Image (cartoon, rainbow, N blue to C red):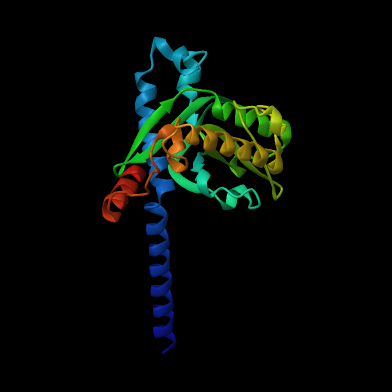
Length: 245
């Protein structure tokens, strides 16, 4: 009887472990990481004398380059935005990730990947978005892993969880009326004021006929909302195990 119970317990543990492994392997985050790593290696091999076009300063940096941890993109439907609610509680997470390209201890540039039609596609290799994030993180003592990217009304914001407090900054956007200066970490109240200014501005443009709609379609550079529609579980498992080999 005791032996039978041990066998049942062992079998249950194996089943739980298998389910956990499968759930992990087929998740969008893991599938995105696999696609990003594979595409990044291929693109690096194609870089020759034009390495400066990709923000590298030497060929040695190219040979040492690797991807850091991804930062996920999110959106907020402007029609439903509520300044009384935490920003992080209103966002819709998208199958869209930007990775820092790192050589040594330096962030060189960005590498972005997006899910479309069940396939992961590289949409950007270049820019200084993650470089700005890591610089602000170092200056303000927060972990880049504790933030996410938000495209609100066509502008980029970085929402940060610093010791449990919601803070934010914009790498490229300033709003003097809200007290927001680009590349400056502020509390979320200032960002919310800026969001409301953007909402009122867009609503006014809609009245004037300059915008057809406001909401999620305004985000992500004018693209429609993205779907987490991936390949079948079996295809994703195959991709995962092939990547491990």
